[in-house]
Each structure stands twice: as C-alpha cells, then as structure tokens.
Amino acid sequence: MQKTISAIKVRQNLGQVMNEVALKDDEYVIERAGKPMVAIIPIERYQSIKKERGEFFRMVEDIRKGMMPADDKVLDAEIEAAVKAVRKRTTRRPKKK
Image (cartoon, rainbow, N blue to C red; front, side, top):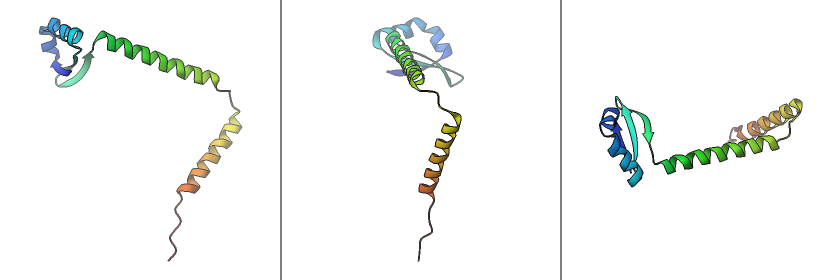
C-alpha cells in the first residue's frame, strides 16, 4: 500500500516506517512542504527496478551496436522521402461540390 508522510513525521517514526516497508511491502512517499520529494520502497522492489533498468540499457546498447553506420546522404534522402510521404497522406484536398 502506498502512503504519504511528511519529512518531519518520517524522522520521528523512521523505525516504524522501515518495518512497514520491509514487513508489509508498504511504500512511502515523503513530502516536504506538501511536495513529494522521495520514496521509500521495499529493497526487493528497488533491486528489481535496478535490474530492469540495467537490462533495458543493455538492450539499447545491443541495438545500437547492431546498427550499421549509414551514409549521411542516404539518411537525408530517406528522411526527405518519409516526410514527403507523410505530407502527401495528410494533405487534405477540398471537397468537390
């Protein structure tokens, strides 16, 4: 369950907050002057997020490495052709009466 708590309250009740997060899988959003600043989440969730983030960046790097460098002129021509095709599709012709 996600809960919101002020920075002052979390300082006063840190042990209790840690127990609720660790034992009940609660999550806390800590606010300062009514503005959300940070979150306290179970360590398993944090590790899962870190793992997924690392996997995502590895996939991006694999994709980047797998792409062959293209000639600038070829890329410019392909971009221009794509722009023309989209413009042609989206140009509305006036209705005939």
